[in-house]
Image (cartoon, rainbow, N blue to C red):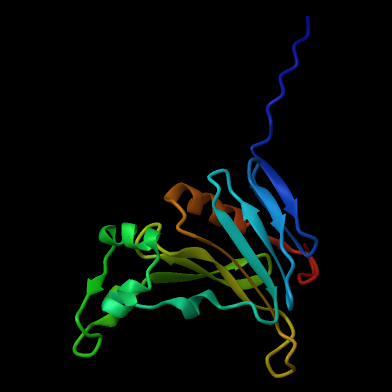
Length: 184
């Protein structure tokens, strides 16, 4: 008697047309309609949303690194989720944001340069696990600022737990930007 055993693959490739990425088998893609860029994303097995933006106006995630120093106005701008998570973070609540404050000590994110496919990439992670966005930004897939035709790419998720963030970054290293690298 011959018994055949089949083990389901733990990963799959999501093809977004302009790029593909290998993700855990229970993550799924979604599409959105963008006005000036190609946008969409991935839904993880924990229902986290990982959004991407490929186009001329894709935002550099590093530009959103604000210190976690809050006066009453900034504290009131936090979401309910952020207020619930805040006690577990390194932050500072002050009466006034003027004065002698070491803002660098309370920056929300840390950055690491690496490469994906054939591009230099900037990875962003919250200094306080799970509080903020995690993702990657690639400044120039093609074109230039001088010619006003630069195409950039970012993909990110908010409030990812440690396990999801680790799986996300592993998936990012498999990213293949089809039209932009000579040897895909």
